[in-house]
Image (tube, rainbow, N blue to C red; front, top):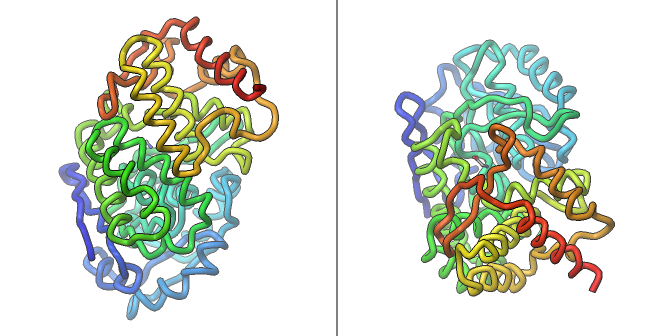
Length: 370
Ligand code: GLY
């Protein structure tokens, strides 16, 4: 079972191959890109323990050298970037070699950035192992690290040469991590494909319980939508911002909760999508039915959907707005929001009166106390 999606970027076009058993075919998939039969793989300790030997076997005749970094968001940092680059140089990775990012979003972003700056740019292959990485972060070439001033503030656009999304790898995810990735899947339906959202409402439980055909279809549709948007707007001058539906709220909540276990990124996206639809409804852009359906589906899936689902204290509404104003999408000092005229009809705007935004947050915070 396999679907291929092409990201049409001219000389930098590449394929995202989505299917089962791809790890065991990694050698055949990657070999056409190689000048010599050798790859440098960077992974994290969790993925390494579970899947590195399977990747080695899948690479067959291709020699594999590997580095395992600690798992977790803390790895997307200067010290681990330095470690990755120094290791790649020590392994004598050359300009024409291929580096493999084997892991979730943290590894994909870090290793992609290391590849972007190593010897002024080497090619890399993404083998994403989480749902979030398969449907979002491995596609589109955003790479980077977090710094004291904020998330992803140091980075580069560097497109992979190939993405291998092996659906089987999703089978070892913790349910919470799977559901966090599901927040990003729902995002695609909400931003641009109402039929896909209808399908997710029906098939979400099958997806969560491991239905391979449903997982293949959900990842493929998500990647198709991302590929199409990235091909139109690689460096986020316009439409690519649609992929950030729910993210302005999400980034504020992640900053407030310390980018850790209290709130995973995909959980913040799910909550952020629900808030973006609530805000859209209060602005008269969409009917009450839309935010109700969004919340009902996310709740039915068992993912976080309300601010009440976040443990511990949160800032007040003004504090959250302050954090939202740090978002990378701020342009000419104005916050930009992705709002919706209905399910599947998102658009970008700066035209959000502060009082309406504040009202949404005040009510969402009040629901935590009731
Ligand atoms: N994750 C949003 C983007 O790739 O643009």
